[in-house]
Image 1 (cartoon, each protein chain N blue to C red):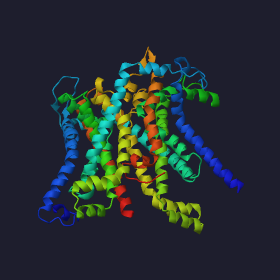
Image 2: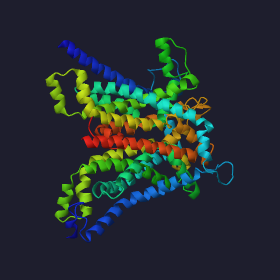
Image 3: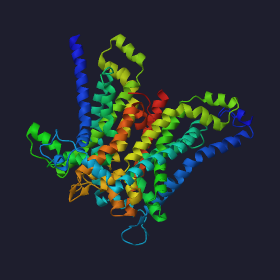
Length: 277
Length: 312
């Protein structure tokens, strides 16, 4: 009995140690955000130090930072909301009316997400450069919305398929219109799907760098852009800047996966796998 | 009243008048998505297809010149060393997915067996953190951790094994493996998640039955667990394969494909040819080939998905 308990507890300890190992690089960076530049570069590394908020003060004093933060928030929220509204309608259509070519369209949608980023953005770049649409919030949002649609349609179709057709029939027989069925009967029942699609598209656009870099510009740059291009200052790598910005920037995704852990699976698999962990 | 008859969905398409309404509804529900796709995907893709037959560079200032299949021929003849990139990428994908799947399976089984573990949710959140981080940020802070002068990894290695500082990312011999290690750090949690999902898809009744019947554990695995869980696991491996084939964001801040070409994967080279050298014609041809690869991978994904649906 004791041996069995001991074994179980050794597993627990092992799993905790593994989890801590996996999160430790992130903790190390978060810790560095509170160090002075000299402490960050100190050898041997300092685990005990006098925490300072100076780096954050420097960071927040940068004018372009607030614009980049605002861009990150605005781009991801608007693009994802547009994508979800549009995708919900299409997913309903695919699930209920099954127009000719549904399978083919679903296939095409998914294949876009399977393509390496530069191959997706190259033709769009040529089009945007040709029409002068680069460095424009509206067109960047439209592109992000387009890129979030496949994922949302896949997730939402899975959820709408799970709502029995009997609900539609009951609604229609009782005198409701199709619009009533769509928004009052089906929509409330796929709320988990909407949440999952929302969160995972949001994390995707939030983390996105390449598209912003290629078809965005000075006025639309987001934080990943800032991290990738603004890492050098004063003749060296600006580690305090990177540590601070990274720490702040990764808080939302981490909070999301803690709060919405049960959607993680659906979100990471295009809605093709359901269940809890 | 008219909407009442439409109640039996897809069963009475012949009723006069109904059909038009349904068609109109179908079209208007699909229209926004189709519009998005035609404008931002179909037209650009056709454009890309067309350009792949041209010799076109944005830097030369010359007008596009039609050259037929010469771009594709050049690719097959190893221009810009793309066969090396491809083999590097396949090694990256193969090793990465294998390591992540094995570790993920191990951790998944352990977490599955530890339902009563104190703080399980917090531990899982910590474990799942790497995969939702901004890849650019991840790449940047791993450059910090790997640094030969003040990186903590070298300090740990020196302390534990007495090793001399290693320039992980700037030494051609270690750069590739260092990037691969970060990829594994980032995506092993995903395979753990998929393992947990696969195990969760095994019906409880069958698990109880094999428990009661005292069947030896290897038979439990092959007869029951693998039987139910294999599809989700296969989907996981496939998603990981596709994603790892696209790796780019992570490498840009760490090595930019260097030193030399040590970490130049397919997506890195395309990115460089298209947006640094502006070889648009050649890059278009390359993109078309990658499009075919991604269509093939998507087909396999959907095939496995349908296998699972048919069984369920």
